[in-house]
Image (cartoon, rainbow, N blue to C red):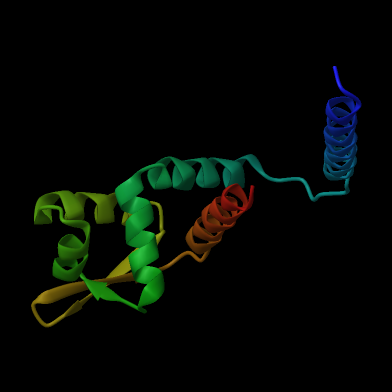
Length: 136
C-alpha cells in the first residue's frame, strides 16, 4: 500500500468523522427537551384526521394547485389532475370534511379554496425536504 493511498484514506476518514460529529451535534440540539405547550387530545385527533386525508398524492396536488391561485373551479382541478369529475369531487369532499378546503357556488360552477393554512405548511415541509435531498 502506497503512502498516497493511505493519506487519501485519512483525509476521507477525517471528513467523515467531522460530518458524523456535526450530525450528532445537530441531533442532540434538536432532541434537547424544550418547554412545548401540552396538546389536547382533541387537537391531536383533528391533526391525525387532516394528515390521514392529506396522505394521498392527488390531494397534496390539489393543495399545491390551490396555493398557486386563490380559488379554482372543479373542472380546472380535474383537468390539471387528469382525473374524472367524480374522482376529483370525491377527493375535494374528503378535504372539505376535515376543513382543509371550502367551496362556494359561482353561477353553475363550484369553486374551491384553501380553508386551513396548515395544509400549506405541510406542502412547504415537503418542498424543503426535496431541496435538502437534492443538495447531497
